[in-house]
Image 1 (cartoon, rainbow, N blue to C red):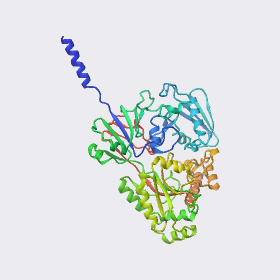
Image 2: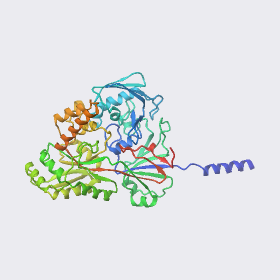
Image 3: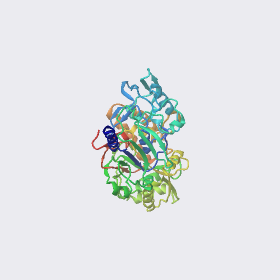
Image 4: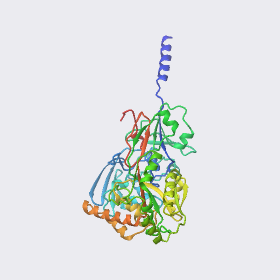
Length: 495
């Protein structure tokens, strides 16, 4: 009898000591635009998908490369990259990862005309599998930043079905998908078979700020949060978040459809550039959103901050502006500015700012998912407001994708939303990728930037930073490229 009593007490004790389930909420301003890998180069989408899929090479918080599915790599000559793959890696359905999956992923991306990543793989001529664990990339020209270019190409299982692709279930990443609800909230659990650093939480939820605010959590116990936007007031007061500053490297810009009047007139684009009061805009938005913002007076290519200095007297050159408007033939006709509803304060400031010099702006706010559809369509655009977060520290990459003439057959200009084309600039952008001598390369890059600041298909506004708000029990170091990985987030000094 005593033995039965002891066993009974032990069962009660063990039940009382059962580990409580921990849940990590990663909170964005809006939902992922797609769950299909290698389609959209957009930060919420990238951050979500990179938790379920792996690239061959990842970059750490300081933008240094480290092995992912490729265990190591060699660059024996200027156009050859040899990547040695990890062995004994499983996809979430249990199938083994091999070089065939790499070939399948890259050729699928290279031939997908709807992919934002086609420019990133355009330098690849052929891909060869040398056995199950070696992949050889042969390039059509030297590419010094090849590892950066492929670091967001997510490897998917060969011939994975559309149904599995749409449920984040064709990868090898640190998380496993469990479900998505009607609000677009994505639920996941750790992938216990993951080869790399393990996720420290039992459940992971990707959710938007608005959905979280509407469904206020009754009990905060054992629930942890990483907000990429300012938390709702109720959460802030209840949970006492720590604010962590992120990099100030995203440029907010006004894009112009250079095929549409009056944006097809360089004089009009120059008038816009001079009329915008960037310092006042930066101060206004910084106070409103609470994250750091600085004026962008001097940049056309987005991923090289301060490369050249094109200082301008901020928004006071009224005589010059009026002369440029007269040259362009503009007489106050309404011009539509397309933007996300989440950026309405920007639009209102810009509208009032430009009204002072006689430029009539009509605000056209849409959902984030609709914004990208409209921008990619291009035909009905006049002006649009977007931000670019560099996925590379080399402006050659940005030039190929954003400012090179759109050439479907060569996968160039995939993000040229401006209908912009300049053959002379195209030649410089293509040529600079083959230069390895630093000073020679710098001269060509400066020439590219000088041409772009003169042409102004994109009109720079401000550089934006991020503030991340995390539960006080968490540790997190923001990435320069702003990608958020659940296995980078730790509890209490646990690494």
